[in-house]
Amino acid sequence: MVKPSYLPAGAKRIWDELVPHVQRPHPSYSRFFAILCMDLWDIETLDRQLMKEKLIVKGTKGTRKHPAAQIRREKVGEVIRLAEQFGLTVLAAMKVYQAENPNKHIAGEGISLLNGQWKRDISCGTTTTH
Image (cartoon, rainbow, N blue to C red; front, side, top):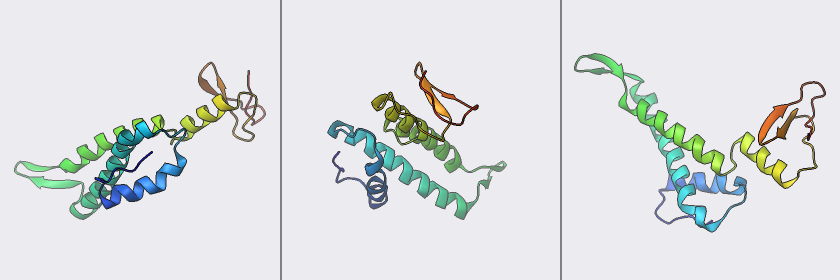
């Protein structure tokens, strides 16, 4: 994937931190990965703003939740969705691993993929392929 030049410095830092962990990178994913990095940078910025200005602010009709809180919430949802697409969540990475290594077990995790869904094997604490 090629890092877009238009990314702000904060998003570029996030790109550099995350790109080594992307499962199966492809050049055509750059635009969507840039969106993920921008969203994460936005969340960092919103967090700083909320820490400085507080979550509850005074409005014309009393106190209310800071408008940045809703924007942050929407960004987090988008980040989770995109992170799964890039294999950056634990579950997504395990699915990729299991698909690429159908006969291998992930010892100690107690999780296995069965018909496209992860299933916990509590009895022995190891992943089983059924």
